[in-house]
Length: 99
Image 1: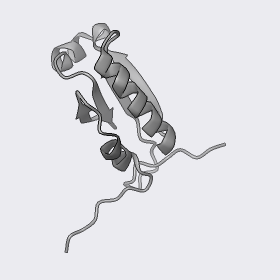
Image 2 (image 1 turned 90 degrees about the vertical axis):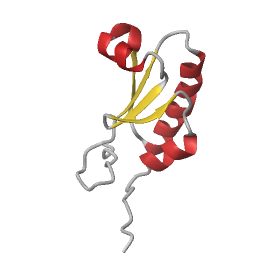
Image 3 (image 1 turned 60 degrees about the vertical axis):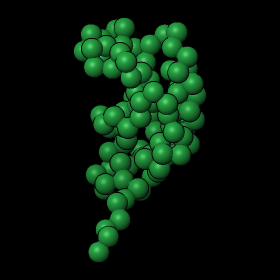
Protein backbone atom coordinates (compact mmCIF):
# COMPACT_ATOMS: atom_id res chain seq x y z
CA UNK A 1 0.00 0.00 0.00
CA UNK A 2 1.33 3.43 -0.97
CA UNK A 3 1.39 6.13 1.66
CA UNK A 4 -0.56 9.30 0.92
CA UNK A 5 1.42 12.43 0.07
CA UNK A 6 1.39 14.99 2.84
CA UNK A 7 0.27 18.57 2.60
CA UNK A 8 3.70 19.80 3.62
CA UNK A 9 2.41 21.15 6.92
CA UNK A 10 2.99 18.01 8.92
CA UNK A 11 -0.65 16.98 9.21
CA UNK A 12 -0.23 13.80 7.16
CA UNK A 13 -3.30 14.54 5.04
CA UNK A 14 -3.11 14.19 1.27
CA UNK A 15 -3.28 17.28 -0.87
CA UNK A 16 -6.34 17.56 -3.10
CA UNK A 17 -6.35 19.30 -6.48
CA UNK A 18 -9.55 20.32 -8.23
CA UNK A 19 -9.78 21.65 -11.79
CA UNK A 20 -12.88 23.75 -12.41
CA UNK A 21 -13.87 24.27 -16.04
CA UNK A 22 -16.45 23.27 -18.60
CA UNK A 23 -16.71 21.10 -21.71
CA UNK A 24 -15.59 22.74 -24.93
CA UNK A 25 -13.30 25.25 -23.20
CA UNK A 26 -9.94 25.21 -24.99
CA UNK A 27 -8.17 26.85 -22.04
CA UNK A 28 -9.61 24.13 -19.80
CA UNK A 29 -8.26 21.46 -22.15
CA UNK A 30 -4.79 23.05 -22.03
CA UNK A 31 -4.94 23.40 -18.25
CA UNK A 32 -6.02 19.77 -17.84
CA UNK A 33 -2.85 18.54 -19.55
CA UNK A 34 -0.60 20.68 -17.34
CA UNK A 35 -2.44 19.99 -14.08
CA UNK A 36 -2.71 16.24 -14.74
CA UNK A 37 1.02 16.01 -15.46
CA UNK A 38 1.96 17.91 -12.31
CA UNK A 39 -0.45 15.87 -10.18
CA UNK A 40 1.02 12.63 -11.55
CA UNK A 41 4.53 13.90 -10.84
CA UNK A 42 3.61 14.78 -7.25
CA UNK A 43 1.39 11.75 -6.62
CA UNK A 44 -1.58 13.99 -5.85
CA UNK A 45 -5.15 13.11 -6.87
CA UNK A 46 -6.93 15.36 -9.37
CA UNK A 47 -10.67 15.86 -9.55
CA UNK A 48 -12.57 17.87 -12.13
CA UNK A 49 -15.87 19.67 -11.93
CA UNK A 50 -17.84 21.58 -14.57
CA UNK A 51 -19.35 24.97 -13.83
CA UNK A 52 -22.31 23.77 -15.89
CA UNK A 53 -23.13 21.24 -13.15
CA UNK A 54 -22.88 23.62 -10.19
CA UNK A 55 -24.72 26.95 -10.05
CA UNK A 56 -22.51 28.32 -7.26
CA UNK A 57 -19.30 27.53 -9.16
CA UNK A 58 -20.83 28.99 -12.33
CA UNK A 59 -21.67 32.26 -10.57
CA UNK A 60 -18.23 32.47 -8.96
CA UNK A 61 -15.96 31.35 -11.82
CA UNK A 62 -17.74 31.66 -15.21
CA UNK A 63 -15.31 34.38 -16.34
CA UNK A 64 -12.17 32.85 -14.79
CA UNK A 65 -12.10 29.23 -15.97
CA UNK A 66 -10.07 27.19 -15.86
CA UNK A 67 -9.54 27.51 -12.12
CA UNK A 68 -7.24 25.27 -10.09
CA UNK A 69 -7.74 24.78 -6.37
CA UNK A 70 -5.30 23.06 -4.04
CA UNK A 71 -6.83 22.03 -0.74
CA UNK A 72 -9.78 24.34 -1.41
CA UNK A 73 -7.64 27.41 -2.11
CA UNK A 74 -7.67 28.96 -5.59
CA UNK A 75 -4.09 28.91 -6.86
CA UNK A 76 -4.45 29.39 -10.62
CA UNK A 77 -6.98 30.87 -13.04
CA UNK A 78 -7.19 31.31 -16.83
CA UNK A 79 -3.63 30.10 -17.52
CA UNK A 80 -1.86 27.48 -15.43
CA UNK A 81 1.81 28.01 -14.67
CA UNK A 82 3.34 24.53 -14.41
CA UNK A 83 6.36 25.61 -12.38
CA UNK A 84 4.25 27.50 -9.85
CA UNK A 85 1.84 24.56 -9.49
CA UNK A 86 4.77 22.12 -9.19
CA UNK A 87 6.22 24.19 -6.34
CA UNK A 88 2.84 24.22 -4.62
CA UNK A 89 2.56 20.43 -4.90
CA UNK A 90 6.12 19.62 -3.89
CA UNK A 91 6.09 16.94 -1.17
CA UNK A 92 7.33 18.29 2.13
CA UNK A 93 6.95 21.88 0.97
CA UNK A 94 7.51 24.15 3.91
CA UNK A 95 7.58 27.90 4.35
CA UNK A 96 10.98 29.29 5.21
CA UNK A 97 11.28 31.66 8.13
CA UNK A 98 13.04 34.89 7.23
CA UNK A 99 14.70 35.71 10.53
